[in-house]
Amino acid sequence: MPLLEVENLSKAFGGVRAVDGVDFALEQGELRCIIGPNGAGKSTFFKLLLGSIKPDRGRIRFRDRDVTRAEPHTRAHMGIGVKFQHLGVYGDLTVRHNLQLPLQHSLSGEAMDAEIARLLARLNLAGTEERRVAELAHGQRQWLAIGMALAMRPVLLLLDEPTAGMGPEETRETGALVHSVHEEGVTVVVVEHDMAFVRQLGAPVTVLHYGRVFAEGPLAAIESNEDVRHIYLGASRTMAARGRYDP
Ligand code: ADP
Ligand code: MG
Image (cartoon, rainbow, N blue to C red; front, side):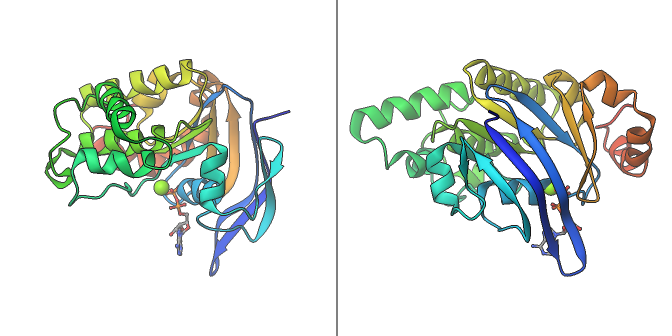
């Protein structure tokens, strides 16, 4: 029985079929990458999985329950944790305060302080707890947003472009963090543009294109797939200009 099973999932915005008949499944303990050109529907797919938007058609099963219509907080309590592309961090609050928000339902006092210290060490953010989040570097805000998802102790962690705005060293550290979370038994899905990062993760890949699953398989097979290279061509010029893509 898969941990997550998605059938024929579809969501249109006006005439745009953002997600169009997607079938997708994850076994417990998997690490998976989702790639695809801008506008392919990757972020919309994650929003449908958490439930912040509801599908027009299709079905989502998680931990053997139909959650297609379940509210986001219900799914979060069932163990779906998400770092969205638009970071859900509060710039005017301190790092500590941001981490208290997801922890406050389960911990208080010294136990909460200990958990915050543990998360900060893990996120490379030790020493930043009293700083306002708006003052952090972009990469540090990414790590904090990942930490807020981890604070809920998810069974399934969804990361939408976790290395956006990061340099090579921060990107490598983020890869190590993803691997360590995965090694603890968490099922992890990473949406990513940066092919170097996808290689570092070394995980099977699902390719979305125009809201559909265009290809799926081991990283090596996806990298050598001519059709995948073709749909990436337009995007790759932009990414090469930003130094983030070397096919
Ligand atoms: P990706 O994350 O792969 O870049 P998105 O899921 O953000 O793609 O977007 C898929 C398509 O849906 C795009 O054409 C985008 O413009 C459109 N879209 C996404 N969200 C909305 C929205 N809230 N309203 C209207 N159109 C949207
Ligand atoms: Mg996106």
